[in-house]
Length: 294
Image 1 (cartoon, helix red, strand yellow):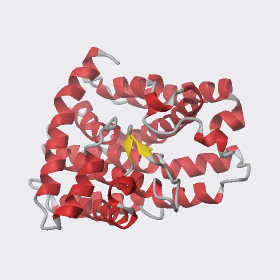
Image 2 (spheres, rainbow, N blue to C red):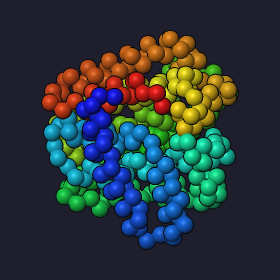
Image 3 (tube, rainbow, N blue to C red):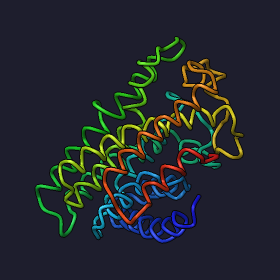
Image 4 (cartoon, rainbow, N blue to C red):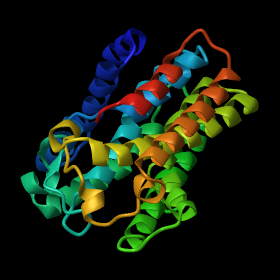
């Protein structure tokens, strides 16, 4: 990780996290529900999705305080998906980010409802944004509905479940991950463009960047499932291979997956090169995603 990105993360992540925790604390909800919501939100994580919102704003050299709230909203969506993924009816995981999963702490019913709450609160957060036009708020809500729902992440999760215990083609695997992983990353990047008032050309280049970095993110996850340890990853390592799940290494070999990762990273950086900026946080984030060890 570059010093530049490390400083950016050290400054921006606490501001986003404080915004996120305050937003949950401020709602009129049962304390037990807020406790379960905050447990998973405070469990840590890379915070890559909100960082993308903020890095796009920096890249386009636009200061928008709403970026913290939108970053908080997308991190809530991501966290809800993890809570539900870990449930016995889904992946049945006992650990997430090195801690007991939400249902292990609060029971399946409360974990399910905490996920439901983190899935719905973000739409209200965006609707109540200050100093953002109604047009932009509506566009953000529509985009989040698309990328987080049946047309995006949830649809991708269904394709992932339906693909278990059978060998997917590479095209089928790409479709799974365009939606399951890539859609929310696309929201984060496109949301930054909307808040910044990006030109249509800039927005399209950022959407293309999001496509490549979203796939790169998932390919790296698949590689880490083989090369990483449970302690490093904060979740069960080797689970994909043990469950005979289709992954990039299983279809392309480990060396082939690494080559595909490099190709998508290169294409992502090519998109950024067409949007000149003195701020290099997006380039640094790209490098971080490709070279991370967890």
